[in-house]
Image (cartoon, rainbow, N blue to C red; front, side):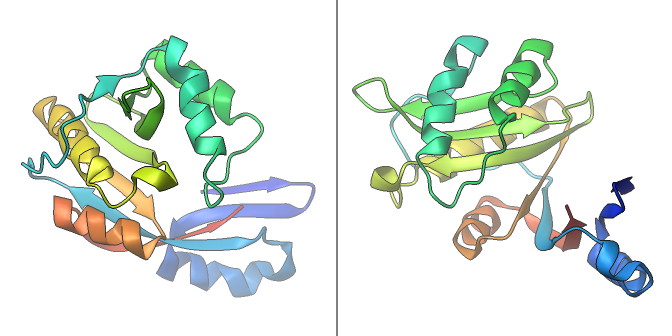
Length: 182
C-alpha cells in the first residue's frame, strides 16, 4: 500500500518488496518500522487464568483506553479512542478483557478490520502488575477460538520478542516480515 501526503510517502508491505522500493523513493519515505506477521490456524487450549473473559461494549471503551494509556511502551494516536469506539459500535472490531477483583481492566486485546472470513488481532496489552500470570495467553486463546469457530483466519503483527514467545506458544506461525513507513 502506498500513500502520499505533502511529499512524505507512506508505504507498507512485505519487507523484501518494500526494500526494493526504498532506494527509488529515498528521503521522501515516512519513518520505518519492521514487524513480524503471524497467523494462527488451529484452535488452542491454553486456559491459564481464572478470571472470566468479557467482550467489551462501547460502555467499556474508556476503561480499555485507561489500560492502554497506562502502558508506556504502548503508543496510542490521538484518535485511538474514537477508532476503538467506532469498531465496537459498527461490529468491524471486537475487544475482550479481563478485570481484577476491583473491576479494573488488567488485560485486553482487540480485533480490527474484521470481515466474515478474517480478523487481525491488535492492541494486546496487560497492566504491568499483572504480567507473567498467563492473563494475555488465556485471553488470546479464548479469543482465537471464538474467531476460528466463526471460520475467520486470524493474524497479527508484532515486534516485541516477549509477545512473540506468547504468540508462538499459543500456536501462531510467522509468515514473514512486514515493513511500514508511516
